[in-house]
Image 1 (tube, one colour):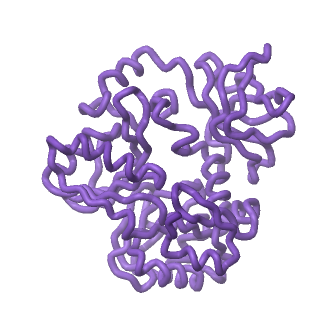
Image 2: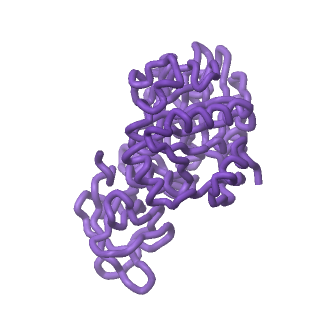
Length: 361
C-alpha cells in the first residue's frame, strides 16, 4: 500500500484507514453522515492525493489530447478545465478525467488513482506517432479538495486570488497558504461548491495546517472517502469502476455531452454509429419507494421479477433520507417516472426512475 504525504496526519486525527486504489486512505473520521452534512452545510477537506496527474506538453500536445479524449479540447483556453473520457477501441471507456490547459502548449490530465498505469500505457500507444512530451507527476503532487458553501469565505484569507471569481471548471495558478504557484481549481465532485488545491508533496502539510487554521471559525472538518461517495452519488456523478467501465459506452452512461464528433478520436466512427441508432441500455438514477438500501451489484427487476439490469452505485442518501442509486436498464425503462424494483435479499423493493441530480441545492 502506498501512503499519501498526509497519511500520518490522518492517523493522528483518528481516521479509519482503508486500502483504496493501492493507497492507504481515510474512509471516515467522525462518521459518514456527519462528514456529509459538513460539506453540504459548511466546509470540509478531503485528501485526494491518490489521483493521477499527467503533464502533456509541446507543439503536439493538443493533437494527442484530441486523439485520446472524447471531448473537444481545442475549446479550452488557458485557465479552463474540461471533463472528458478516454474511449477504448471496443466501445467502452478506459477512464474519465479532467483536462486543464495550463499554458499555450501545456496541459494537465487528472486521472483516477486505480487507472494511472493503465491510462499512461493507453495514451502512450497513441503518442508513438504524435510525439508530444509526456510526464507522469502522480507521485510528486498532492491534491486537497476543500468543499462546501463556506469554502470560499473560509479560505479567502490564505490567498491574494479572489476565490469567488473562479467559476466552475475554471482554475488559477496563484499563491495559497504561503506557497507560490499552486493550482486553485473549481472542479469539485460534491455539488456543494468549493475548490481543489494541487501542490507538491513537500508543501501539502503546510497547506493542510493553514487550511484548518483559517477554517476553524467556520467549523471546518476533515472528510473521508465514504462521504465523498455519498456526496457524488447524490449529484449523479459517475464513479469509474462502478458506473463507467471498459464495457460501458459514453452514450449508455449519459455522457453524450462530452462526446464531440467535431474531430477524429479513438473509436469515434463506431461511437458515431451508436449515437445514430441509440444505445440499447442506459444508466439511470432511481429512488426507492419504500425503506431499503440499494447496493452495488444488486439486481434490478421488472414487474414480473425478471432481471433487467444491476445497481452500479447505491446508498442511503444522507440529504434525502431515502435509498438512491444508479444502474443500467434497457432503454424502454429509462424514462423519468418508469417503475422498476431492486432485489434486496429476498424482497423486490419498488423504485422510480428519477431525473438527476438527486440532490438539488
